[in-house]
Image (cartoon, rainbow, N blue to C red):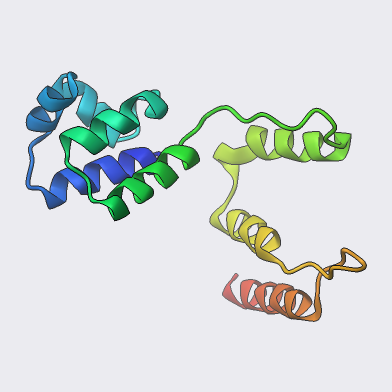
Length: 143
């Protein structure tokens, strides 16, 4: 389920709205809302964002949360023209293997992406190396 679908379902639930009610206000049908919320239907979140914000009368904080959810719900990614070929390879490998990755693999990728970088060498900092070691040890113990 996409972050947009999670947001929509939560916003609908906190307002005590039925899927039919929100569907009518968005110009969709209840089956479509059910499919979106369950992750069985993809939508153009950019097109729906303004309508959802207006029809659900979202607060400023909720609008920011929706914008973030929409950004993370995009299904297409564009890499800069001068991106190194290794980065293209990594992005494609992650994309191709995403459905088969274990929770541990996903956690490891998230950990790698959150690592601090030494501004001079580009290598992981001491704090980052310690975090990788702790992850490695705790993962080994939990298996």
